[in-house]
Structures are given as C-alpha cells and as structure tokens.
Image (cartoon, rainbow, N blue to C red; front, side, top):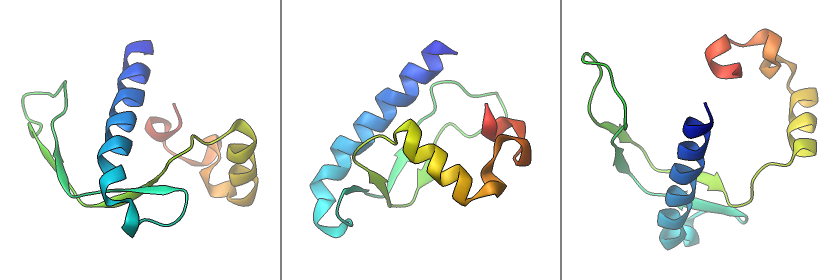
Length: 89
C-alpha cells in the first residue's frame, strides 16, 4: 500500500510539472494537464496497456486535512459510508 501511495505522489508530481507549461489556460492555483497517454505500471492480461487521458486542471497545492473535512461536510454524498469501497480506501 505504501508503494502505491508513493507511486501516486510521483505521478501527481509529474503531471503537475508537465501541466506547468500550459498554466496560462488554467484557473489561478491550478495547473493545466494536457491530453496524454497513461501507461499503468501494473495491469491484468485483459486490461489496456495504455489509457488516453483528456486534458484537465489539477490543484497545485495539496488539499489540507481541514480542506478535505470542509469538502466532506459540504458534500455528504462523498462520505466514506456513501461511496464504493474502491473509492474510499
């Protein structure tokens, strides 16, 4: 689990650095991540080896615990007890 978490942070950092080049199109405090292809490190035999990803914006700063709590309180449908386990763990 720790390796996956580290990998997620690495991918996020890479996406942020790539998105910095298109920052003029992103809202303040966000980086624009351009269209691209994601190559998962681990896949099952029946899963695609690459995934096409549309451009999106990503917050530059990580979300604080307080910011997350405020979000959960404002959006109860995203509370752990209301979403599928795969999205909550």
